[in-house]
Length: 298
Image (cartoon, rainbow, N blue to C red; front, side, top):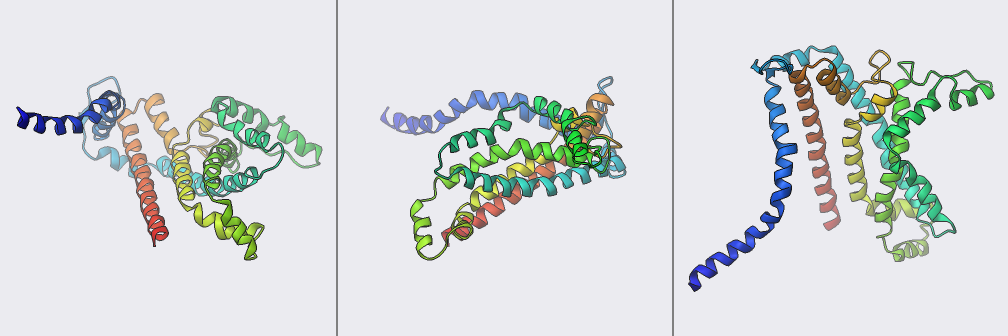
């Protein structure tokens, strides 16, 4: 009996955490893992919701490689990454440094910078669409200054960058809070010692803040990159991918193929490519994180 108890209790102790995780794992299996596997299978079939899936092998991928609209949406997505991510990595750090100062009323500034985060993207998109309108506030201000109005959302050369501005405006406060948590973990003694050595003003942040904030910089860079890759709401509300597909990204193209054209299998193929891109970004993030951790330990 003692032998049985000794062999049972360690096993029970090891399995107990998994019993607590079981409900969540079941929900993830039903809502995430099974649909992901089903989408992977459908990407190798022809399926339009009307008939049973028919296995066609690599035909969808061959179609994808020859689809000019897919390559345009991929370029738009990469342009979104290149333009939005650097701003969302650098600008929130400056805001975090600003609101980390011990000044009277600084909490109101924190609230003001964070307010766009809690606003629904639907509300924000509609508000910015009004601002961008031909008779909106921005163009009225330009006309009052003697300048020509800008077709923010109706010109292919402006539309994608106008949507990017909304993404940046919406994300500044969120990433600022992440940086603020890291800044408040830096001991004040380090800045005092740096001031004695002659490192003050902006230089102290270059010498102390930036090196110690490297893990947070990497985290914000990867999160913002993944978010930029999956951007959808802004485009759906403000431009519908136009004009002339100039603001259409991969996620919006997946939505369009699946729910407008009922090309379910082709949409799954595009989604699989997007999954590989996000997986690549995650692997890069892990590699950079390990490199920075090794540097700090060294």
